[in-house]
Image (cartoon, rainbow, N blue to C red; front, side):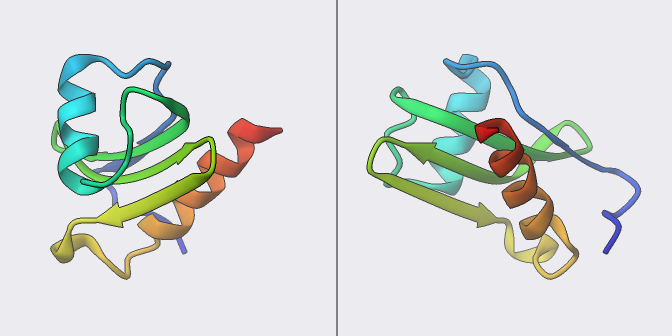
Length: 85
């Protein structure tokens, strides 16, 4: 499923920049955003609307309610998996 036209998925460098760290913590509140081993973020209109995060011993993924079911979840997971290889 293609992503909506204004959505892009990116794998930002770690550690996350402060604004991205805040957005990731908002979407995945239990994630240790200062100790990530991998991250993929979905961005629309300059705002982070989804995150897939991986750390030693765990992972989390979340997409804002209004954006769910549009292929963003799969795109985040694909980007995070691609970062592992």
